Length: 223
Image (cartoon, helix red, strand yellow):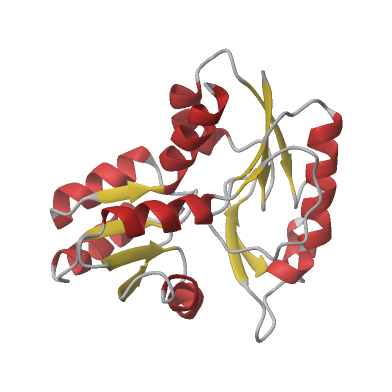
C-alpha cells in the first residue's frame, strides 16, 4: 500500500521515517513531498513569520533548521497533497504537529498529528495537566492557544529538536520540577532517542509525536 507524507520543510525526511517505518512496516510504501522542496535558503529567509503569523519550524535537506510563517506555505502544502494523491497515496499524513486551517482538499484521508495528540493527551492525563516541549520560544503562545481549550493546565518549554543534546537535557530538567501528569513532545522532529532522554531525566510519561502518528496510521492500515 502507498501512503503519503507531507512535510512543511523539505523532503525526504529520512530522520523522521527512521522511527516511523519501524512501526508502519516494510510493506508500506511512503511517498514524500515537502512544501519547501526546490526552495533555496535565501528564499526561505524571506518567509520569516510576520506579526500574527503562525510560526513553523522544520529541518531542511542540508540538515539546517528553518523557521518560517505558515501563510507562506499553505498553497504549497495543497500542491504536495495533490501530487501525492495523483501518485497513488491512499492516505496522507502531515509530518508536523502544528495547527492548520481547514482548507486543504483531498479525496483520501488527511491525518493531522495535532488532532491525535490532543485526543491522546486529554485521555491519559488524569488531572488535565501537562508539559509541552515545543521547538521555539516564539511558539510558546501558540502552545497556550492550541492546548488551552483542551487541557486545564499547560506548561510549554522550548527546546530545538534539531539543536544540541544539552538544550534537550535542560528542558527535561525544567520538566522534572513541574507538577504534571505527562509530557508531550510537540514536534515531528523529536526522536525516539530524545523521548527516552526526557523520560529518564524528568521521570514523567512522555508522548512522542512521530511514533504516535505512526501508530495511528498503522491502525488505519490494518482496518
